[in-house]
Image (cartoon, rainbow, N blue to C red; front, side):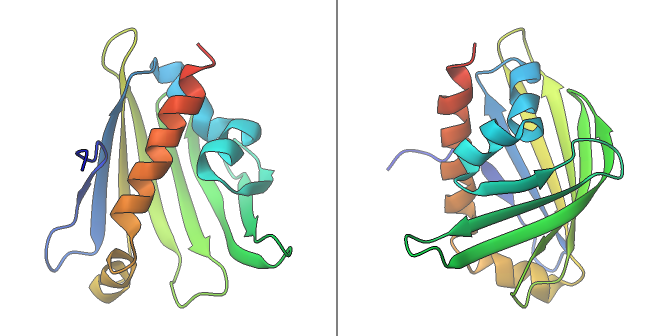
Length: 156
């Protein structure tokens, strides 16, 4: 099995998760993957119903199965939007027991061709966080980041 490139750090008894990933992408392209609805839809494998990439903007994602039934829907509000540097947003999965969480996304240029994403997710309680970790969360986010790398590197 290949080593997962996306690191998920969840310390025992804490309310948060720290996710880090280095990409072979300039920071501008990495940021675009979170800013542009058409790119985000591809690597996340979801329909972007709404994405207002700005302060006080909001977003909504929806995934349907082959029959058109909604299997996943999420939404949130963007609190800070600093191009190529930072996005602070809330994230809420609809129709699930998970309460809203707060996400701090930091984008950092390492070299002209490489960059790092650090995602700090903060939950209301340790139990809420642990519930998410029981799902194949680390595996899922690593797969999504692998797709991001593949799709966005074609934009170079």
